[in-house]
Length: 152
Image 1 (cartoon, rainbow, N blue to C red):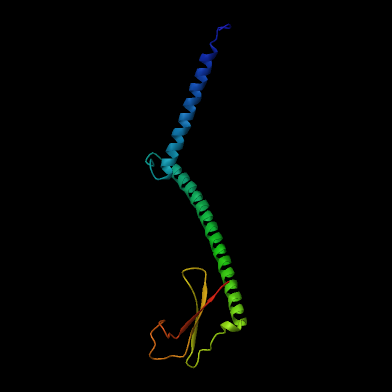
Image 2: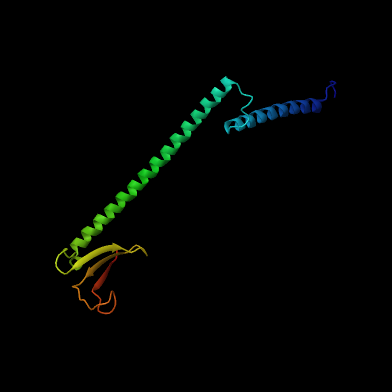
């Protein structure tokens, strides 16, 4: 007030001007967003529509490249998991072949054998079917099925 100017009034006017500019920017950004989702296109001319289309194509390309990168990473991860599972399977089969208690019966004669995985937990079973007897009930007393749990 000493020099005849109200500092608060000047500061208030600068803030009001800044607020008006920010509201204009906000309005323009909102309009641009609406245009990118296909709204408010009536006021655009051919040049503006072409520019908007080019921008949308560029954005779609970036999204597509990111999507392909994510898919590629997922495929690589699944391949690694599959290779690890194959290695575990090879190791288990090698260990099974080397252990005389779990030898596989050849597919001939009256014997059959099967190796399977339990869907209850991480267990593997070797199943051996003994010579068939026509009067036995499946897995009941006197059953032909013998199960060997393999622990690892």
